[in-house]
Amino acid sequence: MKAAPVKWSEQVIVDGRVDAVLLNSGGANACTGSDGFLDTHRSAEYVADALGISAADLVVCSTGLIGERLPMDLLLAGASHAVTTLAADGGSDAALAIMTTDTKPKMTTSQFGEIRIGGMAKGAGMLAPSLATMLVVITTDAVLDMTQLDMALQDACNSSFNRLDSDGCQSTNDTVLLMASGASGVTPSLQEFTAALSEVTMSLALQLQSDAEGVSKEVFITTIHASSVADAEEVGRACARNNLLKCALHGEDPNWGRVLAAVGTTSALFDPDRIDVSMNGVTICRNGGIGDDRSLVDLSGRKIEIVIDLRAGSESATIMTNDLTAEYVHENSVYSS
Image 1 (spheres, rainbow, N blue to C red):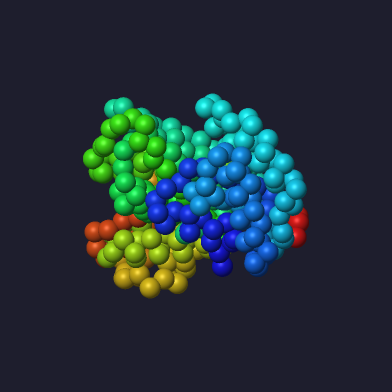
Image 2: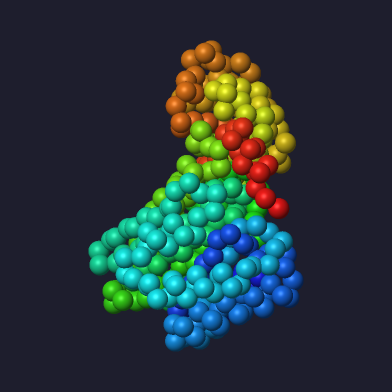
């Protein structure tokens, strides 16, 4: 179920050239049919003409309410203003402008040698791979071709955005865009660039996690000794999407039984009589049964670390999520349709 701007942008990036990105918040332009696609096309042509570039080289990203046409007069007026106020130091304004239910803008930068990488993101709800209701734009001055950029971005996303699972809900408008200007004149090794890019994507993912709708706990679920990375991810994701567990964590209750119940819904390979579970360093479940005293677990802080030991192999993965709060329910019950 791809939104109109996603369909448009998929066509734009085919040849590997992107000269500009137009982003709007307040309307997803998803499930709007052919008229919605024409709206995206019209906005691309309008901005491209103002910038003196081809609309075929302009990516469009939209976020907001699904199922409504965009207010084109307002959008084009805003786009016209944005074009006339373009500035080298406008990154903060852009990150602020694309927010929806976010409470703060998300930005980060990184530099290694002569190469710089910068990124901004938005997203607070519907955060679940792949990728979730997030818009991410990353730029670099490295000299890299389309294939190299794609490989680096896939690797970076797999260890960051694709392991962020706030509420298990996916979006119609997912976009993570990486653009390279080549302005540095330096071609880094792909390994070195991917490592630096991964730092950027992880920083943005953590900012998204910390600003998830209604969040009061940032939860990191690490599955170790799994038979495969896929198993480790599946187990972590099952826990991250378990509302009973998320409510318990909000109430600062180290309810390891809900962890095991979630693990039991997966197809992962494990022996129920050998599994261990720890919360914030205390092993409260050992060999599938009662472990250390639950009263030893302190969940009063904002950060909670859960480790699930499957004892089935050598692979591991960490899923990032958060608790389920009354504020989350309120925010999504009043989000107008």
